[in-house]
Image (cartoon, rainbow, N blue to C red; front, side):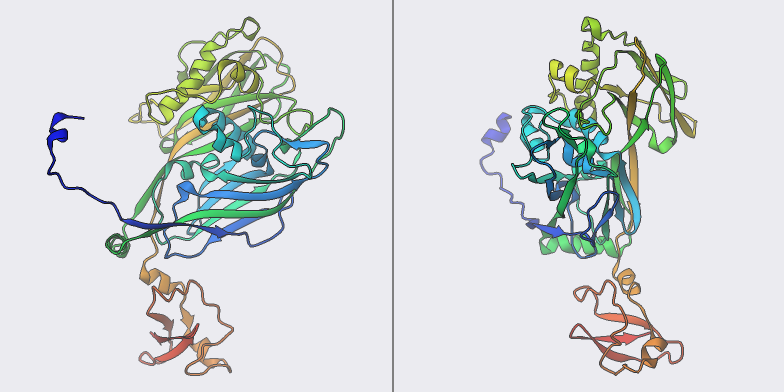
Length: 463
């Protein structure tokens, strides 16, 4: 501490009471059917709350069939789902496909020995190989959504006056989430999900901060959500060749890939005999990524796993945290030996690019070379790229317009009364704390108005 600070005994103290309360609220799906291939939607329709998505999580309860023969794999909970999407005000802003593989790759990169216990609570058990379910196959889990979607990890602010919807798509099979306890004991398995809950912290602020937020909303000012999105591609069968050229995609200039992670698996998909969260080195010798004509990395890797020559690959793996999180320390969750046996993945850092280049698009091409045939090998490539979402919070006027009634239809109803609204009309987004009156259309009499009773409170209707 500087000497001036030590001697400044008359300096005032400050207290921070802008946030007065943080409460976790539970949101459940519309449906109670969580079978394979089902789409599960969970909505937050309230627009007068301030959700903090960074600390939200999914809570699961379920049961594994044939608990005496099967157990959940490492990160098995993520393999229950094929895809996750987030919509804000009805527009999809972020999504992750091949959720099990994507979260496994990202988890090996982002995890540290210090937060391994948190990962274990979300189903990561590669260090101790414990059983996530009890003797009856029953289990529960809390999975931070920052493990699944880039927006939840990077956006560390509240959302204001917006409707949210989280959409989960169940996998077509549960085989990738399970593994046999004794080899050959069974060739089928199923997981029954009994409960899915989205737990979201709501932030309550003091009057001064609330007034600032309301003034910002009334200005209808655009707000921005910058984050890094995860996009995973799959090459189901590399074939008998020793060299593969894979044209991944053509990306826009605004969504250039900043990190490219490649993982290989040999005959693991839909196999109860193998752990689908484990990756194989498949005797690769070199990997290169081309963004247009620029190659990453510049030099060849010249790997040789038979001679234990993989340290360069491990160094690329450890450098991810330093670059991605912009911190000066490397603290990977895998040591070199565990990296070799569990996740010999290839991490290519392309974050340093010439963003002022004139090209409007970027062609992403991947080259993989191996010393042996790649027969039976499946390749996965995770692209992490920048994304910025712009949204305008719902203002008071927009909320009112969402619940406009047709005056002629209302008054022509035989159930109409001066003080009672037609029960056949659905009131959407009626928030009494935000609305003093509800507009309605009147095609005949411009000045006609009436009071109607909504949820026990009088509201004046007028054009």
